[in-house]
Amino acid sequence: AEESRLVLKKFIDEAIVHFSADKDRVTLLGFSQGAIMSYSIALTFPGFVSGIIALSGRILKEIRPAVASSGHEKLRVFIGHGTEDTVLRIGFAREAKEYLATLNISPEYHEYPIAHGISKQEQDDVLEWFKKS
Image (cartoon, rainbow, N blue to C red; front, side):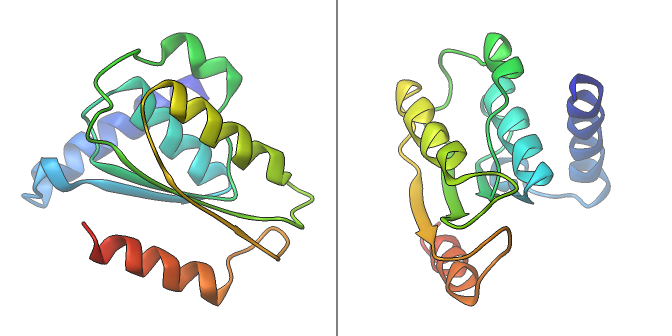
């Protein structure tokens, strides 16, 4: 996970340059493992991304020592998770929300009556979240 985190950071840096992207508007969207990696990047490199959409993921306890204690003031977070998820239980989303609060991050948080997947309502909620930015 640590090696992947660093490789992903490097890839995002290169993609920003290659596509002449606005580095202040980078948002990561991840489902399951992708959400785990999105949390890891955003929390250990404060200010590197402007937002994350974490769908059915969790924050790894292993990255917590590397999480910056400040610099997250502008980070926008959307959390969506199924209450019937048996792959990554809903408790992980609830724990993430609580942990983010300790970093002064107030995510937009949604629970859905689904298993490990993405519902139409969740897609609509993500689109609405993007419209607000």
